[in-house]
Image (cartoon, rainbow, N blue to C red):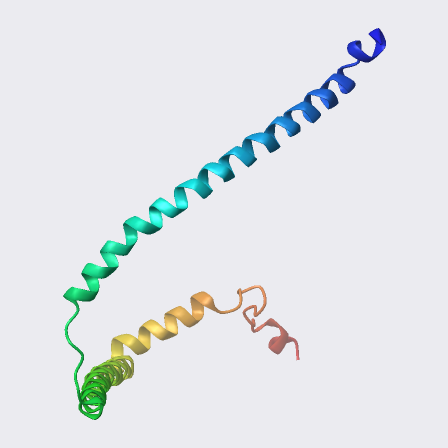
Length: 139
């Protein structure tokens, strides 16, 4: 018996079992208290529902009229969305046309700059060495 109480693993297991037992009891107590509270909560919500029903506007007697109004609202909304999309598309097209025109402007300075950059970013000089006149003289 003394060996069991000196072993820390067995002590930890015993403590775990005891805490699990007491944990179950506390959970049951919480559930019981929640069950008791639920009917009170439901009763307090029902007067609010009654008030909201009284405040609600009277329904439109003619269903066809209501459906027509809803359809008209949806049509207006889609028309507004369509106009907005058309404006966005036109602006995007105009922007791309402007950038193309700007890029295609060629003058003397841009040509010179292109040649210089071609030399800078081209292959190194060691890959294409200068040709000297010596081999031509030997012949």
